[in-house]
Image (tube, rainbow, N blue to C red; front, top):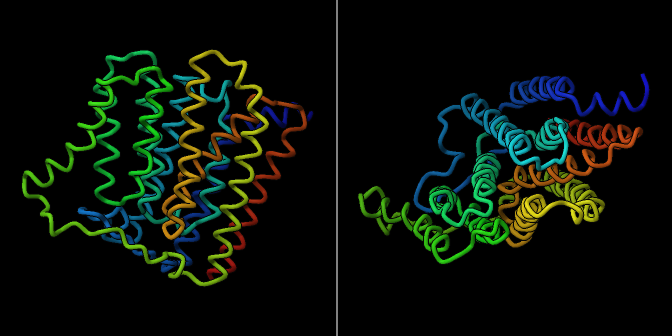
Length: 328
């Protein structure tokens, strides 16, 4: 098989499905042989966090896997409708799933991190549909409403409300009406919660700033930082190498790319500012990194680019193997 054919194969739907099957098998095996794992406690502001929604481990596992699948579906829809990758490719799927599998405890248990990587991409899809449509206040209201509702379960969602407002400016729809819609969307969930007596002021639980890293041992902490560091490195390198390509895009494509950049930077800032809650941002980091890496390889389809693609996937496979060894 020629090198160009191998590269084309890696971008195909068949390869994405094959990797998805392998990752699912690995995830089930991990959850079966390591049923306990590291249970990181979460505290909601006024509502239970995602980690407390599911009664049993396997129900939590099923919902977590469904969350990863939902993220993938949203991204594929984004690429189909808004051409965010600038090409027809399914390579986002192997990258995202490989990154997720590198932290199997986060991938296989429903948590705020898993939900964050579903809610924010969904908000981005709604935002992109508003391009140059200042009358699209309903979508802006819904975006703000969704983020505010989930903020009631865990404060990590709140970081992305300003990012969506900046996104409104990039979509050329930021004005007094959209700002009012965003403010109303952010306030409405809290008015409903307190107005209908679902929660009371004394039910508010301030964020617990006890480091979640204190709940895992030194080896697991170091491994988590290594995985996150490698992901950030790949993301920033691919983003830098793609900058000159994005300059030549049309106005809409530049706006979409700029919105992704804002979300990426927001994620990095949140991880640094809220390092105690680092695990909540790992799936979102994986989403951003997979987007940037996929964008690079979809616009730089050199015949031998398959070597870099396979190398990145192999590193994450090795990191998953290390996680298994540490967990035993």
